[in-house]
Every structure is written in structure tokens, then in C-alpha cells.
Image (tube, rainbow, N blue to C red):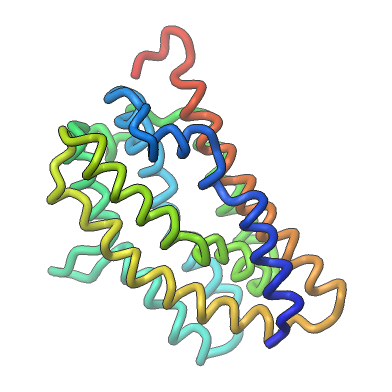
Length: 229
């Protein structure tokens, strides 16, 4: 494993991961209104439903059976199986716990243009770029446990109107994200050896941080005038 590359990737997250975004910081300090939190959960759902799509694109671009055998678990984690709930269902329950009916999430009634644009750009990146670059972009998961722990503590401590039974998505990610990040980091650091390859991995992770940051920028600005919530 290239310790230098691993250090560079972590440095990107320390500087640019969206736990630093003012919206997330306000969320974790208990400063969001009910409407703001509901708008966030509704728009983040568009990101959630596209996670298994981008992972399917990684699979489609990856020629290695052993990697595909590992990576497919990510799709199962979010889509579930017949008779088995996954992360998308857990997010629908989170929305309900925050007072957003699942029909509003499924029909994307509150989806903001900026959120759609950012998430679609991420999916397009995973479709068009080499699969290892898409794997590098996924490494925001290295910092996911940090933000999830802050988020759960905020929900329980500040937003007491949120039904705590709806927080299972976050609890699941505390187990899934470290597993996924460790495997993805190993792929990237073991296989991307040249300076140019490593630079592209760093750029991919920077791009993913930009996607998450833009998503929150859109939510923080709120709906367009006359668009309603």
C-alpha cells in the first residue's frame, strides 16, 4: 500500500469533506429549522438512490471478477434483496421520521436543480472514467463514520421531534462504510503506482468532495422562488 497516496487522499478529506460545510455544521449544532432538515433529507434521497447506480457502473467497467464479487455488496446494501430491506428503504424511513412522507421522496417533489445536477455529474463520472478513478471517488467513505456519529448525536440531542427509530440508516453505515472504505483504499493504493495515476485518484476524490459540497450549497439556498418546498 502506498502510504504517500493514502496520506494525500486523507489530506483531501481533511480540507474538503462536507463535514466542513456550513449547512452540516449548523445541522450538528442543532441550528436547522424543521423545514431545512426536511429539505435536506428529501434532496439527499436523490443521492441515495443513485449510489447503487454508480456502483453498478463501477461493476460494468471493472474487468476483474474478484473485485466485482466484493463490490456488488454495495448494491445489495442500498437496494436490498427481495424480502430484505436495504439502505434506500432505511432512508425512506428516515424521511418519515422527519415528517416527510415517502411519496414526496419517491416522486422527488422537493428535488432542487442544483442537487440533481451535482448527483448526475457524479453518476456520469463513474460511467465515463476508468473504474479505479470511480473507486477513488468513493473514498469519501473514509470520513463517513465521523459525520454519521455527529449526525446521530445531533438528531438525538437537538432534534427531539425526529423519531429515533428512523435513524437506522446511520447505524448501518457505521458498520458498512469502514468496510467499504478499507477495501476501496486498498484497491487504489495498491494498483495506482505512477505519479500520473495517483494524481488522477486525488483529483477524483476532490471531484467527489465537490459533488457533496454542491449538494449542500443547493439545499442551503433552498427552493427557487415560486417553486414551493
